[in-house]
Picture: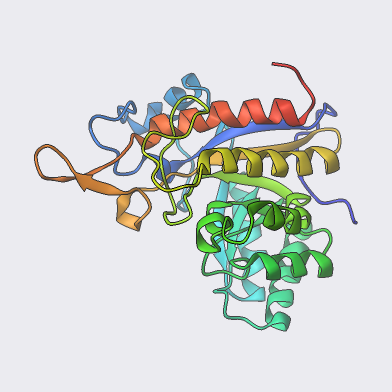
Length: 300
């Protein structure tokens, strides 16, 4: 396979993990959250103090004031949109870009033209672009996504595996069989969105230990399944990456406004999110770092 164009920091060091935070993770947090919503000019300072090494910007415009690195996101529906989008984000100083591509109703030729345009745009703009595995896009189906890897071995993905785990109910019919089928995707992971799903819900909370989450219902330990999936993706990166290459892991836990965080009646009868998404994001960061050390063969 052609060597993918990962994000590279120019250091020549062993491939590494960096944990960013998608800034939409901070939207609509309740007053009880451990995130206390500091002024915008102090936002990055507070995130850095909590261990985040960068941010994913979710809107156009300048980044928040501060010294943390940043990356971007966007959507590409037509091949001609790829290069202008890449150039815009490169000009802003984004390290890389994750994209939703198409709507999932395109035929194979349309899909391949989109992917080819993105790879060319990435090369011309000198900006790594990662196609996100997401519902309502060309990668919503793991089968089609694997076919993309056969046509374009150099393609790279932003792995948001909640969309497969829930959207394609990966545990139905055997999780391990699905994981084995997805190996070509794991081999091309250059970025990861952190979200844990259950077979029936796109976003569910976990506990601070590696035990089955107290809030879980049903037969499946989705927390254990996601540790397996994330570890497989990290090993895929680690085995293909070269000196200076960087994998960004970015928690992206969204509010109930977008039907991600589940809402339940609180003591006052008002609908309330079941968990603190910022505390969950910090927990995700710890899990990701531990799994990456394990993928790299390091003791901890």
